[in-house]
Each structure stands twice: as C-alpha cells, then as structure tokens.
Length: 569
Image (tube, rainbow, N blue to C red; front, top):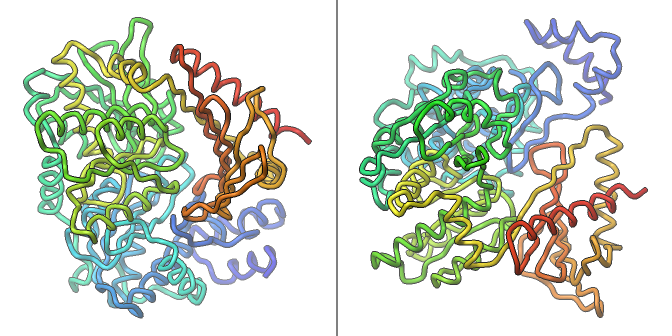
C-alpha cells in the first residue's frame, strides 16, 4: 500500500484520539508520509519510535498488534505460557503496558505486570524469578520525550535473539491491525489471567543484588554521601532504596525526583551526556558528598561524576567499566575468592584497556558484538558449562554494567551499589575515583576512548553516511589524520584485510554492519549505525606513551580526520 492508501485505511478504522489526530493532518502530504511511509518493523530490539497516530509510529494499535504477535508465537511454541511486563516513566508507558497485558491474557497467556514503574533489569529478573516464557518492557531507554518503545525478552531474561524475534515478527505480520480488544484489562485482572507483581518480587530482587556486594558495610562505615538523580525515571525508588540500605546519605534533585515523561529539566535524559548532570551539580554545590550518580529513564544505564578543583568531572562509560573490573578482580584476588577460570565480557566497541586489566589478573576477556543480549548469551554459555560463578563482570561503553547472573540485562540499580561501595573503599584510602582512574592509566597505558554521534537529521545525511560506510568496506582510507591504517575488518563478512599486502583472514565473530580500522600506534576506529536511533556511531581509540592528555589530543585528531573523510562528496 502507498502512504495515502494506508492513511485512508486508518481513517476508516481508527477511533477516538487517534482518529482526531489523523483528521488533523488531512491534505498534509509530508505529514502523511512521515506517519505512513514506513511500517513498524519488529527486530531483536523490539520496536522504538515517536508516539502518535500512524503505522510508523507508536500507538494503541501498533502496540496491541505486537503483543498479539508475541502471544501467537508463545501459544504455537514450546515455552511457558506466561509473560512478565514492566514499564518506565514515559508518556503512555503504563497505558501501553496494560494494552499488551490484555492482548496477551486474552489469548491464554498468564501475565505478571509490575504494580508500578520498574527498571528494565527488574523485568529481566522477574522473567527468571517467576519462570516466565517471555517478558516485555515498555520504554525508549534514554531517547527524548516523544519516543517510546517495546522490547521483548526470552525465558532466560535476555532480550530476544534473532531467531525467536524473526518468528514473532512473522506472527505480527499475519495479525490484522484493527482487531477489536477481546476482553478488557479489568475483566482479565478480575479473572486472575493478569496478576500484579508485588512487594515479594521487589524484595527478592533487592536481596539478590545485595549478594553481589563485596564489602557491604563499608559505605555506612565511611559515611558516604551520594547525590543521585533518576532523571525523572524508574530508578528513583529502587536506586535510592539500595543506596540507603547500604547506609549512604542520599541527596536527590527535587526537580528530577518524581517520575515524569516530560523530562523538563533533562530534555536529553541520557547519563552518557554531561548535560544530564546539570541539576545534580547544582545540588552537589550545597551538600557534603563523595560521588554523583545518574540513571536513564528505565534505569539500566548509569554514569558517575566526581568533584574536582575545577568543578565536576564525569567518568566515561569505558572508565567506569575499567574501574569496576579492577575493583572486583582486585578484591577477589586479595580475599582469595577468585574463580578457577574467571571471565569478563565486554562489547567490541569498549575500551581495550579493560582487556589489559583482565589479563593482569589472569581473567579471560570475552569480546562480543554490541548489544547487551550478547553478554547475556555469554553468561548462558557459562551456565551450560556448569560454571556461572566464573562470570566476573559484563559491560558496554554506553554506561551499561552487570555483575552477577540474576538477570540478563545491564543493571543500574546493582551497579549503583557497586560504585558506592567502590567509592567508599577508595575513600578509606584517601582517594577519589578519578585519582584511581589516573592510577589505571599509569599502570595500563594512556588510552583515550571517545565517541562521535552523527545524527541523521535529513534523508540526505543518512544516505551519505550509508554510502561512506560502504566505501569503508570497498575503498578504505590508507591513513587518518596522518596515522597509517594497517588493517580493515568488515564485520558484515567477518573478513579482516591487511592493507600492506591485501592478505585476508576470516574471523569467527557474529555478523554485524560494522567496520573497524586498525591504526598504527595502537589506535583504532570503529564505525557502525545505531541499532535504536537514527544515527551513525564512530568510536575512536588512541594510545599515548606520555600522558592521558596527549592520548585525548590524538583521539580528537582522529575524529577531525575521519569527519573530513565522511564529509567528502
């Protein structure tokens, strides 16, 4: 169907506010194309889009259709006929969660719905704790306020992998868009086909993550002060609760304390960005504190900042991953608790420094494609080998971390506990986390890892970026910023090519639309499209033998050179 034909179909079938919104754009060809030029595609990350009326947007019809497709998949396959559902603070999240619950329950799937907004990792935990066949989260993670999304999880608590996601997608394609609701949410709740997840599961989650603590009494002993912002999201209750159980003094910015889909004081609610800390820095100026933490709206990502003589400095996702890995491995080594064959896991775009830290402690570092589901899959492999205790830590440079096997997604709640404990440990030694990070740079090499986001602001920008990605595969540059390119790996084929002689090696690594340039002097550049947002990501690693500042200067030069290449006609 054309966009206009789809628009007409929706006009004939939609009701209520959706219909009124569609009538308001009648005759506006550009707006009709935006709403109906594409149809929601379900992938391994589920669906994520701007909310609104239309086939390409997120609304009650597109959400219900996904839930019905999941229900059809579950009823046709050998999985438990039960599904846990969680949701965050975004506009329509609770409404979409109830729509999904009713759609699943009406088809015979027992639904466990969180009784209030809950972080994504708590949903992963609930799937495993309750023995469900699937899970669902209503969230757009760290996207801006106009977005929402729906992610599906398998019975292991991991985000759904390619094979089951393809089967669910096929069922969605067979599901008519405008089938009326079979039974109401309230009716199914009364029948017991929908059940709220209550205090017992919340408490089981808290008890389980507290087992991951290494020095549980140290935060209280050191009187640690924590400024924490949930950025108006789902972390407000559980992160504050776990910090207080540790004995921390917790200070939360009033303007970001309560859940809100407006994100009024943090319009870009991503703790990776320095701007997300503005309100926290203001509060930190007025209270005695040791660290500043912020989590994204669904509380799976977390970042940390520390006061300096010049103001405040935020640790990057890579730096925090290195700090946590060194802290956990160091503690296990000193206390004689190191597993027989320890393994840490990180995504391929994360800092190589982490691999050096792991090697120092005799820990194997497993490298995975981007996406925390691959880290979850590595844990599953360890379980299959009857050695889950060997798992040390999983992390991604995008501020996602997990210690423990109780869930299969990054968890900002348990990570907040670990960061606070780690800060208290180093406070006892008279050090801040920044000072400890400087020690790691000195010990393992001055290595800068930076990220450039190229947003697809227009179709032309998107087309140019896609063209340049293709060019990197077929005709890569021989140098960037004057630094020779030694090898190029095309992860769509898994072939690594040495530029000096053209020789190739086939890598045993999952396929991904990504290019890696290996540079002289230990540097590298990785280019890949984002899996959840309209942008391309470019990751830079630069190494210096002299100082951290020089490493970051080299990374900036690499970015300047790569930007020039990407902007060439």
